[in-house]
Image 1: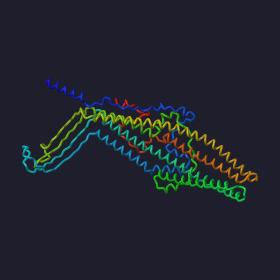
Image 2 (image 1 turned 180 degrees about the horizontal axis):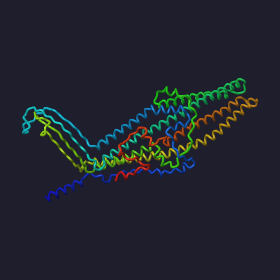
Image 3 (image 1 turned 30 degrees about the vertical axis):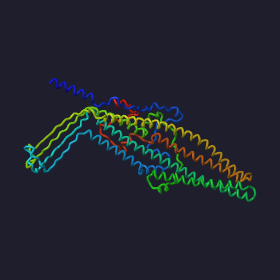
Image 4 (image 1 turned 90 degrees about the vertical axis):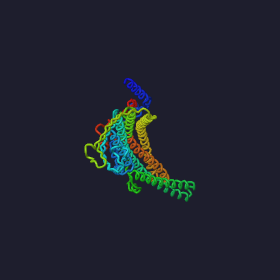
Length: 500
């Protein structure tokens, strides 16, 4: 007996020594601490604000038509349907992962004719015999080490990331509609200025032709006038094409045909949002940008996948049972002797699998590293996006102030030129020449105003575009079970916490 026990102990020791092992495998990715991304100097001259963009930030731009267009886009754009379908698909994966944690129970039955050979004493007679049975089976793969729960938590994390990415798609869409709307308004202004320049150039050309006929000017001045007229006609065509392009872009964003864009009225001049940035930007930004929140959830999900993969190296306990009734021939199915049952608890331990489990765990480690790298990349880009947009807005403000002075001077110059002409001191050709300088100044100012509005929208988008994590439940998002995993904090857990 002792010899048998010794042999069994030696055999068990050898088996355990040869078991598949996860030793030496670990992820290398480390999430960046948001507080380590310094932005105080870059944002030193920017007013601090405790407010983040509101969910309907576009209403602050002052154009009801834009409000209606964004509402239409959020209702009809096919891109959002794609994002929502991906979120629903991820939710289905959550349900499947949760189902693996539960025991299963099946019932079945059969009625058939069977020929049982005579080699089975007491059963077979060599003839066709009716065979009937019913059964119920129970099976439970017990989650001893929490691997199935970890897999479910990973699926929940991926589902939440997909839902939040659908919210990010809405933020991006609303921003793109506003930016296309700004470009449409700018294109109309370009068209107005191009028409004014064409009128000016045509008047100057006619006056030059009269002077050439009178012998005052020569053909060179006339050809210069022809060139200015042709250039103005070309700019008018460019402006018309810009209007068509902006209308087409809006049609796509609205999820409609090209005629929808042609029905959009001329935009009003939008009022850029006031330049202000929340004080604790790098840390707080993590909770206000949907792409960052989604990236954090994917890191957490990848960490849970690692935990689930590691439990595959541990012993597994499965509990199975079956009960039923079976009868052959003329015997009644529903009688006590027809019963049968089977109880089959089973313990398994992976010993050798050709490296399948190690390869799987190594892949999960790589997925974690990838998720961390994508989170880090998104975080760094997000903070720098805000700083860059702030810097651009500050520069545009300075440019606009300088251009306003130039525009005022050009208007004064045109007024003086008209006064000189009416007083008989200057010529009308001189007045038209000064007017050209005014139109150039107005073109530059219109471009700067459009850039300010566009950059203001980009800053709003960089600050999260009104996304709030708590909005998800109110908008009908996925609600996991009561034992759902907690939301990740601003600082994502390091890899070591998922691979202990």
